[in-house]
Image (tube, rainbow, N blue to C red; front, side):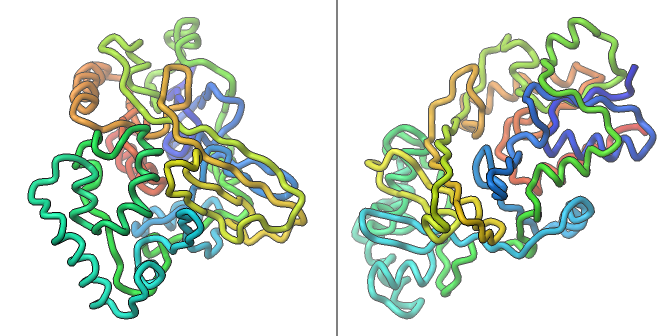
Length: 365
């Protein structure tokens, strides 16, 4: 019936559907959720585009990808400048001269570098044995204690001394007064939300929602010549080698009868004693002036089957298991595995699009 069955209406699947349809291929896109756009889905609440599955800020240095997304949306000039809260102290992120000035009263890059070097030298760490020692050896005691330790332990659900050192390969410090979180040349939020952007990508493509892939294939095994699968790779193979592990996120979202709750889109809470990792105030992504506001508290959670998988746990054990699943995938001649779940890696949005465009070049059209 179809040239391609595309499983998942997120970014990877939408790019495939758009480009294949443009080449004259007949595509069917399915998604088990009740909406398109995957984890970048935005829901309009009182005129505010709420990022339903966590904050998504588009940023890239890939000009081709930037020009590609601008075909489907006009982007504003949002610059991500998060704030960190530790007890009653406020700090700018990423770690920069504003951060160091607030923490130590220093004014120059030389003073900040000297302070970090002094603290690192006092620790006498030669070969970091865990994440805590790795982080301490990079940024010293104060930055680690106030801005890294608690947040990381909430993210991973365990003590930093129980986590491997390789998780934090580097902690970038900027010795300039610059609160722009990303170094990429292009950055912004699609005006009108991500859902509208994906809708334009899927124009002219048949989309069916609330459809389970396994049930569809069981009922119609010959529904398409080829399959583009963006779900969990281990689920495709019915977990026959065991489940891959993820971290998940739980959200508490509420509309509040005030114009402004926190004055910034993203505020991180770095104490472990505060149960949520951050609060997102959605209207600030698009410079909203609505009379009410919507906030989301994010809670990191241990993933279990049935929960939404967010962050792959790319440790040695899971990486080996993923490679074993890749060997099975290589035998599926008519299936393309793609996206964050199909390729078991944490992708920024631009990297998802780049991977889809590159994988499309391998298709014989």
